Image 1: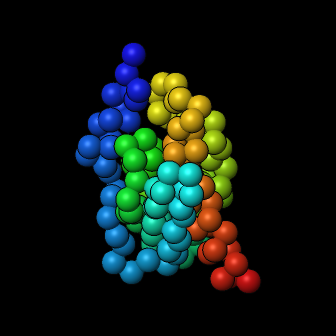
Image 2: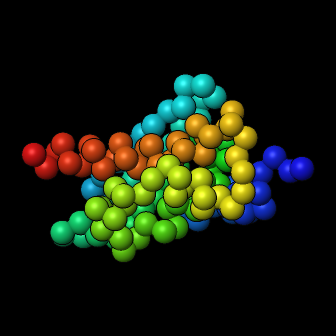
Length: 126
């Protein structure tokens, strides 16, 4: 049995939305202290909140990079409220197969970073 699904491996090898945003409105970095994965999230927003551009970068394992690619390819055009409603279960189901229990934190690192980015944006608007 393969450790990762074909979908995860394809996205890890050829990630979508990997890179930087030229002039981000929101920037946030998250670290998984258990394995050393580091992800940076950058978002450019339209007035009123829909995401115009969403990118991620960093040094991460295949499952974190694949999960980030799958998640980030679905973000552009969505509102912040819609993105805030994404659950851990939604992310895990999008990976198209079971994730070993000891790798779930890696798979959820991108959504954790995205949540941190949304919180940091909200804090700056107050």
